[in-house]
Structures are given as structure tokens and as C-alpha cells.
Length: 640
Image (cartoon, rainbow, N blue to C red; front, side, top):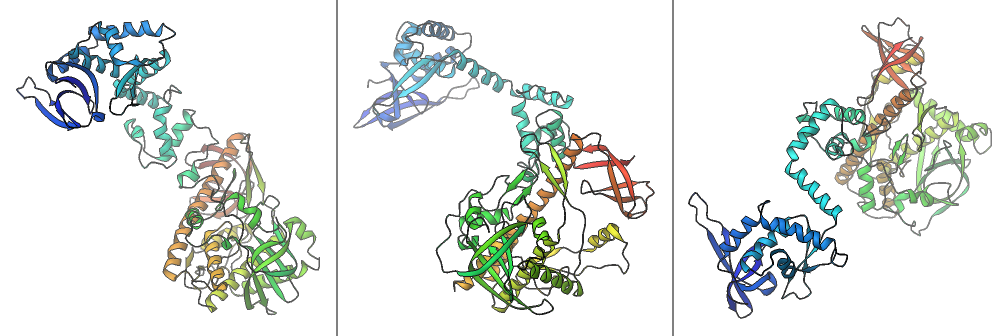
């Protein structure tokens, strides 16, 4: 290259000073001289040919002369700007050149009509920063990079101009949006880009929302939710609570794969998986062999190893999230076929073989890896068959165990339940009263026996284990009759605790207890199974400290899931009321206070407080919703 040839180095105009072996010495201006007397600063550097792009071998007088012309050319009113527009019109009108890339030198000559080294950098800057031409670097020869340009489409030019306008007028446009937001009248979809910040805040993805603050509005998720509804960005069926609690609304993706091949005891006879007709993840089955109660539980721990990626994922979820609009499973959907009970014959299980005395106290509990023949029954069908020789002993065991626990101080609370159903396509909400079947109590008592048996087995064998305890409630000597009494009893209950030290579970009337019957959908149960299997396989156990950390993390996530479920259920109940604007229903008085009374609306499974209402305990009145605040999950009822 000649001395003073014009090149581009690090996006700056530079001149060649000379060549030394394989390197080229270039110089450029680091900072320009100013009117305040600040002097120009120059630098020089030896570079490889591939580090520079040659604009012209013809020499330029100085770097400053190139920069001076560039400043003039970049003026929007300059001749260069006008000439670039004219050449674009010429080339874009020619079908052969409208999209073809051409060397920068050729384009320069079309624009300026002559080859002037001083002007090359300035014209390049106008082309690069303008809208009309697209730049591409030809690197087919790394030692001799070339600049190419091609005309852009009119659509692309309009898009770039719009972006530039938005950037230049960003503050002005944002201020106009804030004014529209205060008025509650947005210009959609254009304002959607601003409302993304509000939506992220409403979903709990961010902790603050500058837009709400700048608009002089309360910086709360409820306010954000209200605005999203009013502006039509969300409709009333948008359920933000799972995401707000940091939970995924989709099932886990990591596949468990095929269960391992291992020795299992083949349990004779048939076990019964009794569940709701809509259940798709049966994870327990029960049977009585004439001597022992068998409680068979799904065995995903055969594959989910401690601290594996699947285990960590399950720990982060804590539990399967059951929402009115569907379930987000703790373990992947595809695992059900291999691990749920009764979907394949025979089913793989971790089984608890429990020997009971005549008072239904556990004399012995054995834990086995098994193969089980499982028959699925609905609660309704099981009730119809309760005199069947295979089922009758299970009903008798349940009654005896219930009585045993009652004598030990167990607390039994029975309140009406409602199942909220959301149609996946129409988002129409319906409410279904949950029917309580005797067979449901049978399953519950057998699961409690399995949890008690597992706790005793773990304690006897020194296995670090997740125990669940609960302090005794302080129950008044006299309780009201009916649901009012059940409500008062429920208010006496203490919170449960999860730890690695066994303690009494007063509410269940048990000296020690653990939950082991739902490893497909509860992390605490899954980690309990991992410990039991490790013990059976004579493998290292998770130590107490690690166990405590993991069950605490899983329990915290499970609490978040339960809160999201409660919030979601309330949300959809309020949507049901909004969809049925003329709804009225019956409310039963649960508690009478000085200022207001608490009522239960059995049809909705919802409690409400009413003031100035004269109604006796367990008495009924008719109510209707007066005000529904969906973002705050609040509804005000009034008597009618």
C-alpha cells in the first residue's frame, strides 16, 4: 500500500504510514481539536492486513482532511446526502441492480462522479448511517477485505426510519403513552411494547414497574392486573398466580426413561387403585391378603436418583400443581405410563406390608420392591362393592383405624368442598360439589397407616427420613353443632412441621408419621422413597443435614404450589360469578362476631364476611355478589 492510503481500522478512518515485514503501520485521530483549545490526539499501530479495510490506495493529505469532509457530508442538508438518495432511486428502479451488492468504489463514483481519497470516508459514513443501502463485508480473501453495498427495499427503509424516529423521540413518545395510560385509553398494538413492562410486573417477573411509578399509580401487582384488564390486554380468564408464585404451568420435561430391571417380589392377588374418575395419575393401591394390609405406591424413585437433574427439578417444583385449567406435573407426563399404578400389568411398586393387631395398631411394617396386579375403581364403584370379599376387609380396617386415632385425640374436620372446572376451549367455568364416599375414607386411612408404618420402619432402622408432625390444637370444651362447629375446630389447628426428627402428629392421633404415598406428585414422598430404596439396596443413605436441606427446599416449593392453587381457585370462582352476573346462592352462618359474621357459601366453597346480618349459627340466608374485584381476589356479597 502507498503511504497515506485511506483505510478503515476499528471503525475509524486511518492512513497508512508504511509497511514493515508482514505488518502495516497505520495512524488515526483519537480525539479531534476543539474550539476551546483542546488539541487533537493521534495514535499509530502496527496491524495485520486482515485488521484493516482499504478504501483507496491514492493518498489523502491527512486524517483531518478526511474527517473534515465527513462532518460536512453527514449534515442532513449536504450534497452527499442528496446524491445518495438520487443514486438509490436510480439503482432501485433497475431490476438488475435493485438488490445486487456492488463494490463501495463503484458506488462512490456513482454518487460523487470522481475518485477523491479525501471524500471516501465521508461518503462511507453517510451510506453506513443512512437508510438507503445495506452494507456487507466480503471476507473471501481475509488479507484483502472489501466493502459491498446494495439498495434496501422500501419496506426495510420505512422500518428503519420508524425505529430511528422512535429512538430520537423516545422520551416524547413515552410521555404521550403515560398520559394515555392515566386516561385508560391505549393505542394498541403500538402501546403493547410499553405494556410489556406492566405485564412482567403483574406476573411477578420483576419487582418494580417504572411505568406505574411515572404514571403516579400504585406500584402493586393488583394495580398492574387492573390496568391490564381495563386496557383489554388481559381478559378476565387470565390466571397470573402460578407465574406470580414462580411456578411453571407446564409439566416437567425431563423424561424418566424405562424403569431399571431389578429383582421384585410378585405380590399374589389383586390390589385396588381407588380414585376420582377424572384422576390420570393413580399412585397408590390397597389390598388385604387375610393377614396383612398391603399399600402399594408408585415407584419413580427406582429411576430418579438423589440429586440427579430430575430430582433437582422435582425439588424446585415441590409438588404437582393442580389448577382448574389443568395439572403441571412435578415429574414428566410420559412417566405415568411406566410408573402410575394400573396403567400397565403388572405395575411396579414400592410396597408397605403392614401387620395390624386387633386394635389396628401397627405390629410390623415391611418395605418391598414389588410387582403388583392393579385394578382401578372409582370411589362410587368401590362403595357399591364394599361387601365384596376383597374390599370388605379394607373397609373394616379403615373403620377400626379411624376409631383408634379418634381415641388418641385425632381431629376430624368435614367441610363441604367444591371442584372448580374450566373448559379448555371456551374458558367457561363450572362448579361441582365434591361427593364424599366411604371408600375415600378407606383410602385415606390406608395411606395414613402406610405413612405411620414408613415412619416406624425408618426410625427402627436408623434411616434419616422426612417426618411430619403437628402440635395438639387448643380445642374449647364446647363446640357449636354442625358446620359452625367444624369451622371453629379448623381455626384451632396448628401448622404442621417437616423435619428429620420424629415427633407426634396430634391432629392424626399418631406418635410419628411421614408421607410416602404420592412420590409422583410430592417431593417429600419422593425423597422418602429414595431413602427406603437405598436402605433396601444396601446403598449409601442421604445424611440428616443434606436430607433436612432438601426436604426444606421441596416443602417451600410445595407451599408456593398450594398458595398458587388456592389463589387460582379463588380467581376462577370470581370468573364464574362474572360469567353468571345474575347468580344468587345460599350462605350458612359459621361464626357470629361483634362487627360481622362469617358465612360459608357451599355452592362456591367460599367464605365471606357480612355486617349487620341477623342470623343464628348454621342458619341460612340468600346472598348475591355486589362487587367483584378480580385483581385483588375479593368479592363483596350482600343479602337479598
